[in-house]
Image 1 (cartoon, rainbow, N blue to C red):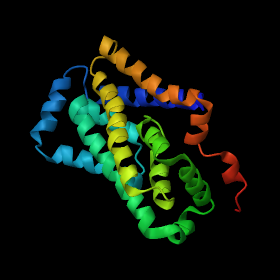
Image 2: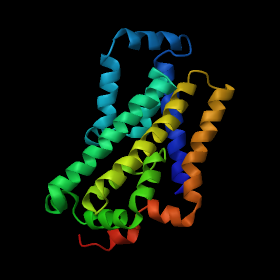
Image 3: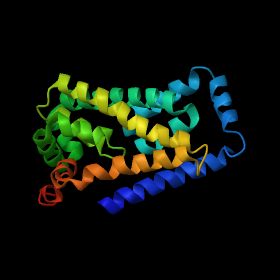
Length: 221
């Protein structure tokens, strides 16, 4: 799993570098921001919508949040990305609780049992860790919390803290792509790597974050 996280970090860096090159940011990073700012409210609104509904568009949050930092800067990227994660989490939680187990069982199949029981066992604290982790499986936990008996208020309080934390890590990394090889770039890269790998060093937390494969493999097909 550690190797997979390292690969995800490398892919995020590579995509960010390619995006930066394709947009010509080596020549004028300020020019791109000026163009975005020239669109008024449309660009931030579009970005907020993408982050909020990314789970239905099959867009990875790591890529979106990195792009947000690159385009809007670390501060605004964190604000927009964090707000989008919170709204998305509440939306997934509410839909799962409203639609109910029977409707979702048809669509998730045997995976539903593993997701629900795992989320029920770990509670809001680890939901927060999965949300704050830059590559954590937060969408599954948000929907799983809605299926389990996790209370609404603790869930919202946790994602209000964890969502902006995730957005900050990846938006800061995206903003640092303006100046590769700079101290800021290396600091944000090391910080992102540490945030991604350190939680997985604890065996119990690793088991909490990653639903047991056996539960899925042994479920009826």
